Amino acid sequence: MKILQFAFDSAEETEGFLQHCYPINSVVYTGTHDNNTIVGWFNEAKPEDQNYAVEYLKGYIENIAWDFINGAWASTFVIAMASMQDLLNLDNRSRMNTPGTTLITGSDE
Image (cartoon, rainbow, N blue to C red; front, top):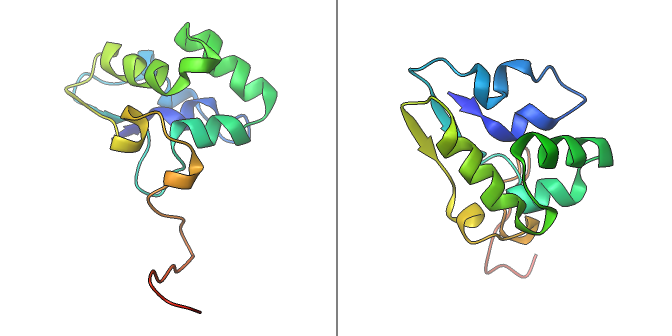
């Protein structure tokens, strides 16, 4: 399992998450339920991480979610997965989960 979003975080070891490094029997995800959406991540990323992602994916800032999706689909994986939030190009307001937090909907608290 490889998470393409992890490939562009300068604070972490990222080499194994770049799409050209994936073993043939990998499953690649743009992100997971615990990650921000691609647009949300990009908007909060350091400028050097943004530039690296755009440059590596040969993409455009205006279309970054689809650049990630196309990058995942272009690698030598067995399966590629993208969240609906990324397919719809949504920002962090559509994030599925934030680890370590609890959100109770329909509550006045």
